[in-house]
Length: 346
Image 1 (cartoon, rainbow, N blue to C red):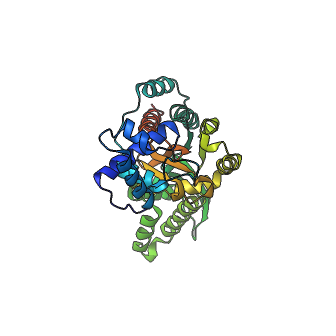
Image 2: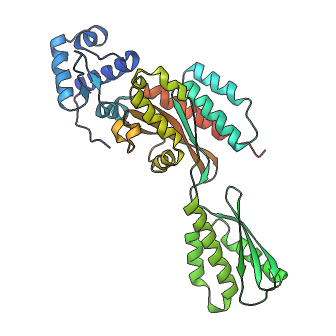
């Protein structure tokens, strides 16, 4: 994250005006435009001096072919962190989302595809959405089924109704009645626990609990393997929206982003690294680790399917975007997605 150099009130107002005007027009903003539209009481000379200072501190950039200035990544970051005002999604966006979500498929995949389509439509950017994942795999239910006198099938149900099965060989013959009692005891004691919590319980078992120890070891192994192999599935929509932005007229820039979107694993890795220390995370330009996103901004939040089961939803667009409206619309679609998923089983 870029560190912010403190700005006085006038510089903040000028930076905010440059960001707002450039976002709207896509044209570098000069002192005369600022004086005429935003700062009637200030002279063009005073504004030019302030613009020069903002260029010197890295908040603005002056293209060689223009007398105007455009925001840098640092400028957008300062705007987002300190100057951006909270906005409500426009009535048109709210109406579109309401209408689209009135009829949704009765499956998680179908709902996510609908959410991606709607978000791309209302933001006019590329939408991203990941399949819901359990933040930390926890046990929902355990069944133990006797296969042979010393062989047991462990049926492990994790939160999110993911089923794992594993055969374990015991040191001595165990009846189905004994296995059923052991399963009831385990469900009573370890339901809702993680692999780490199970390991702590394992340490408390005495040498007379060899069969129970062996089963818990296999439960830990199954959960740990699942978490290591878990892949984030990323859906996206609205690639055609890129063509509406002049930033992607350059073919090489567009190709690099399209390649990233096609490589689901790399995009999934990028999204997995987002910490979500805030309700909405905004990653601007060169804050992105991938070269394919260096000219882009990501606006991301989470949606909820159930307790501890969440996914990521958001957009990729040019750094020149109306951040306030995009944030509002990402939140809007996130909330709608969460509501539909919550009622899926009803």
